[in-house]
Amino acid sequence: MNRQELFTLFSEDLFIPSLKAKDRDGVLQEMVDHAAAAGVIRDRDVILGMLKNRESLGSTGLGEGVAFPHGRSLAIPSLMAFFARSVKGVEYGAIDGKPVKLFFMFIAPPIEKENRYLPALGQVVELIRDAGTREQLLQVAGYEQFRQIILGDGEESE
Image (cartoon, rainbow, N blue to C red):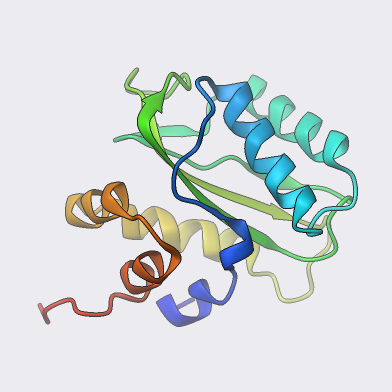
């Protein structure tokens, strides 16, 4: 999956540049409520329960201030990608013990014929390995800025 294909999974409706939540459960609830209000998910309680259950198995906070809450559910018709940022950071139980500021949520139906869920998750993990990309995402104030970062617009050639 290339950056252009990855970006097609995101939408301005599923973008929060400044989360209000102060803890992990609050972040999950705020993101799920936002997705429900956007009409993307069928049952907010089912999705929220699935995400909390997934976190109970082990934190999706992978360190470096980034978390990837994710899972599969019948309560969603197609793959959903969501980006949110917490300016102050929240205690999330990340593996490095540091607060999380960047959240990439992926939720897919149990059967997905295009099979984009895991490739998309992997592509974002690759992108955020770069400290410069993480720093840019920490500064993102609007969706257009987010688009440019994900697509790599304006990056110099290596």
